[in-house]
Length: 498
Image (cartoon, rainbow, N blue to C red; front, top):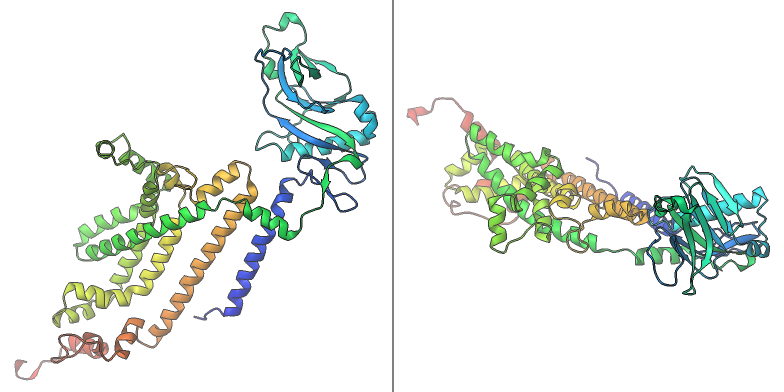
């Protein structure tokens, strides 16, 4: 097997790191791809502002109101209300029939916006859609709506059973966008909240008055992105997987060793029990653990009664990782032990070696390459566990939230750049795990091809290594295995019956 060169490994790592850096640096722009427009002089609109290059107007102080209120409060007008700023000159309301855009007539004139111009309406629509997307916080988007757009400068608009009043001054000195019944006869039968799904408001200004800033550099974007990430899922995953690996390693080796010494019928039963978590869906494992340690079983109630509550705790995350990683250690160890020469093990027994010494000095060194590969895979499996952990340990930031769980909830929350960051981290980690296994296997194979394992070579190179049988026959590791096999298979009758 050809070993990868250090230059090729460095090149792969460099490419992956550059991809990660490019992704992270580009992430802030992706989030506002429709709204963070660059002007001709290289300046960029700020987060709550937007401008189109070549357009004579833009928006400042954009705000999205996903929910209003119809409660009767002193000083506020009647109806279903969305609060707006005093300087608001543009309001959008998503109604059941259309998307209504109200523009203050004086502000439109000062900004150079012509309501009768289709070009100006399309430009304003693009700006509003872009800002609505960047401020949606995972909610519905104007971009996805199939409703027609209605532009108006009138302070009041009747549409269907509802009346919409724009920039209504309250007695408390604040301003509101209000939804009321179109006529008093149907007021009691209407749910005014159904008349407006959500509302956006902003200030329409000339292009020269749009709030802009110098576009951040690549380093600034990367620093902002990496500085805003919560790295606790990485440390939770690392410590959970490390402890789970230690437990799985000990239990897996012990189970494999004990299984070898049983009868074929018992061995088949034990092997099925130890291997079943590998083939079960992780959510099923998590559900069974939740039932076992929760209030549903006597064992769970007994533990809880004695102050041991495991559900939705960090120990639950460790148990989940042990359950899914244990079969990998067990199966690789069992396969490695079964592949050893049984005659060699019997020869060691004839020399007076105990089972413990055979295991530690013979079986483990010879089977170690396979066991090491299975151990690394078990660690990677524990790092990537999702379903069982989420079911049994839950999602608590800094406690049970591992990287896979963080990916899922970041994506569900609309924070796609951070989810992609963790995806790249997992890909890099998996790449190095596979690379380590391949390099270690190739390194061990080099010794195998020369007829000796690494453990055997170390023992032969160490003159101080010996055993209690040195004076009567020598170390079992120094025996010519081919000659021993020939003697044991020799059926020629001995002279004198010996």
